[in-house]
Length: 420
View 1: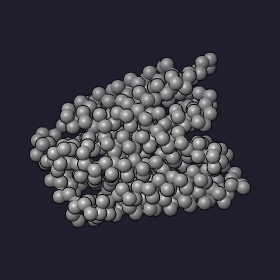
View 2 (view 1 turned 180 degrees about the vertical axis):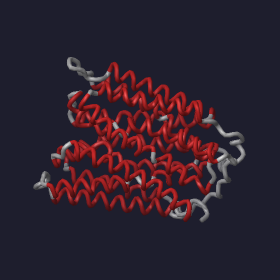
View 3 (view 1 turned 60 degrees about the vertical axis):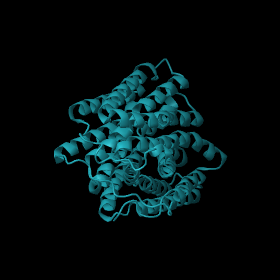
View 4 (view 1 turned 135 degrees about the vertical axis):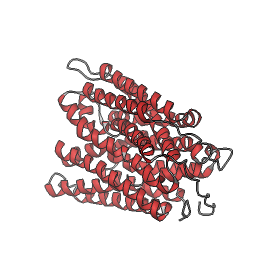
């Protein structure tokens, strides 16, 4: 992509009181955190889900990936609807319906003392949650692009993207404890309450901006669906998310099975990954806003992540003879945390540039394209990872996660996406 001219700077969003703009951002953070508590938090209950639903590792990987499949299938339609109808109706519809689907799982698809629901009943519910919950991504991202000017968009979008590790971190703190103490009826019920609360906040605060058509002039009349640059950027984002999903979905299983780590270590690692990702995303958004170096940052982040996963694989291989010793547990847990943070640090920067490339009026569509790729990765990664481990080993699986980062490099542009 280095031979493609960079687009002109996107005009600033309409002037709006600061309090109103930050309220819009707060709604986006709340909506994404509520859904991410399910999408990124449920995998932290993997050990309990495997026992409660009586699944093997292959079935567990399928169950954990199906929510991502639901999002991948319907993310783009939600993005198109957002560009047509606006942020408010799409976000309200999606959050309310997601809360209802999670409540259904709590009542009808949770193990009890005498009944273990079938895998396919659980699968149907998780796919439905993904289909409905995917609405929050494009709608909240488009709102950021509409309400914030170019000099603030990287920071604002990165703050919005911290909702993913924020929700995941809350899920990592709360859901394993609920699963162990009260079962999955309580897990799904708590997630339903989070989505309902976010819907109430959207009713109170979310508004579509006036005059959006003014600053959001389209760069290409055919739209982002026919723009190869947008598709390449979306595919790169999807590839770069696969290592992160490997950590989110199977880090607890890896540490439990490989190192015999207890629930305290499992929870500490997952919370550290999510909190570290939050800090890294905000810092990267602010840094790239000030320096205009978003493309360079994305490439460096991909390279560093690949190096971190290679180091994790190497250490896991070296300690495989005694993985339960305190030093081995500490080394693998520390490297897993560092690799997970690095693989999660770039999201706000990438989404900002993708939406800028497409234009504000088509930001929902562009973000839908990217999130379709992202959640396809969320489906495929946990499905494929148990097979990789069974055919080779955990060290090989982590090295392969780093290779996915390197595979994204040819799709990432080399020059700055905007003027410095």
